[in-house]
Image (cartoon, rainbow, N blue to C red; front, side, top):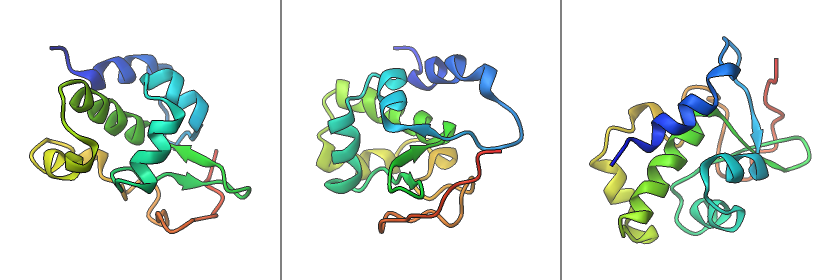
Length: 119
């Protein structure tokens, strides 16, 4: 099986620069193939995702988030249950896809309403 992170990385290669680029949930769903409903559940119910929130409370995701989502999608396709995802991820090389990654240290899953930098 090919690395699912490679597909997302290839799609986003044109977006790479020194600034973090933020994507709304519908864009992330389209690019990763994971439904909006599942993305919300992975954050709220299972705690394996942590979206940054815009000033209006909308979920925003970085490139690192999308890599993590692609890895989660591959695990789900292989039959890993969402409630077991944390344990499965612990055994994977996801250091650069950590829930509270260094691309936005103020990010928190506790309804963060900070407006991320978009420059």
